[in-house]
Image (cartoon, rainbow, N blue to C red; front, side, top):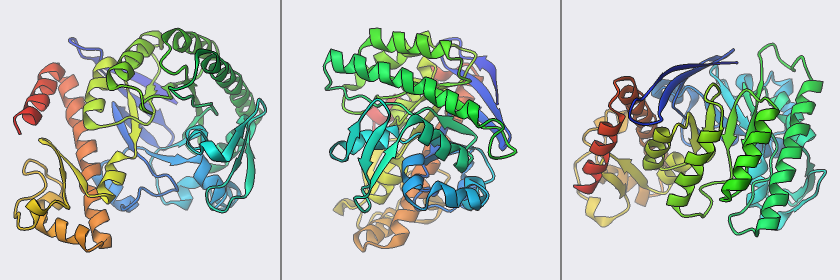
Length: 375
């Protein structure tokens, strides 16, 4: 993998870059649609290609439980299995296990957990998480980490951060033992910084991760309940400690406004389930804010979701029809809503990149905020 820093915005800390993988180039800042189980819910791979998705994220935890990484490996890897020719990033499963609080027990060796599907017992260690990701064949893999809670006390936060660092070391060593990889293409392992909202822990974690010399770094454990202003402060401080010559990935964030604010701080990579999850729930993103399509006010509204949007949904369908689909629980509702929302996110990132390239990101950000305030 190669990361090229192309240019930086003179008025902010935003930057344009390019990640080169064996499955293609990823231009940053980039938003990665989330394909949890090898599918971005509601969309085909052809649609994702048409939308311009450069990289898709898939989930180690879910693919391990079903259909199993061994099966996917026998099928030629995740690229072949899901018929996706472009880059893939696989996460380690740490956050999913964190979210299953009542189903897991954390030990130094790893995590003992019960499947949310059938209650069966499994054990996931850094070594196992790397085995699974190597078998899946993603271009970018993530270390196995312990995602901490913002409600933890300082001692528990310290223990969690230290364990994350030990697991990062074990993850790197496990990948090293499998070189060459399972596949002909290169697979690269990113480190993940933890530490909650404690800036001292965050800084120490990042500094020690840098010593492990990963080709890219992620900021994890945010946007899980802490105030937004505090999240932005932690992100900004963390970016100041991370090396500028390597890609910087903010995990699980966030809203379109989060993307804009965090790009301005220097983030290169994002993923979030909001476009498709909100689409399935009838929550649609627009330049003027969001609209909830089930509301009665749209029953006879002939307008598109967003008059300024050029996606195929806005060019063809009315709000009234989309409301009818949602109220009728039609499958097409999830498809069209998700398509529009993913288009909106990817188009937002494209516009952000254009604004950085022309040195007008602050102006673009002001225009976006003004448009939402006056809507």
